[in-house]
Length: 293
Image 1 (cartoon, rainbow, N blue to C red):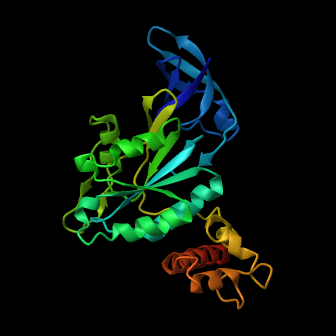
Image 2 (cartoon, rainbow, N blue to C red; image 1 turned 30 degrees about the vertical axis):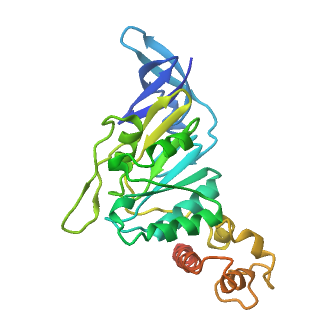
Image 3 (cartoon, rainbow, N blue to C red; image 1 turned 90 degrees about the vertical axis):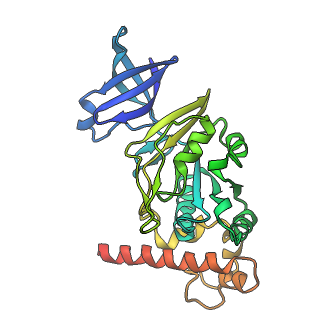
């Protein structure tokens, strides 16, 4: 019987199959083969106790997508939540996350939450920057349910992962989509205005048939070291059409002259601030690569 892992607690897996949830263990052979079932996996199970809904995972189907941290597979869309205020928008983190989504080939949506707190309406500049690139941006005020219906439409027929720093309002958004308290509300520390992480495990919540939300642990860091520094430019999607204008093959778009990307920044075709964040991420990746040797 085939099913979908919707939750993992320690060594137990809740597998949804034919509208039933089976508490399942994994065969020892998986450890031997150095593979562990994760939330999002499509698996084959054997029922060992139908009355108490107990089963064993026999096989893991090939994964379309796999994320190491948090461990999650087969998602089709990532919803990147950015707070307009409290905590302030972390666009460096957002650009890392967007590059990672491009790298693994998953659709990305940006949610600008807490717009009601941004009295200077700086979120409008962020909205403009990313909309021009081609990303879907949704403005929300989750506590007052503004933008929730728009978000609900965008996540339909997808396995969605919600990602973003702690305190940006992921749990509030998810609770708003379900119109009930599904996940624990994140609490912003008044002392340092940083989010306190409240979500400790990955779980898929079913909205309706073929539509799921994964509430993932809040990120304090986002490791994208799987991407090589020299390949990073390929995952900033507005860069692609200007790379062919570079004079040198293998241009890093950092220090070289006659660089198509840098010219596009000068001409206003690429956002200057986003380019500067690209340079920061490039240098971070380069530094990690050099430390390996």
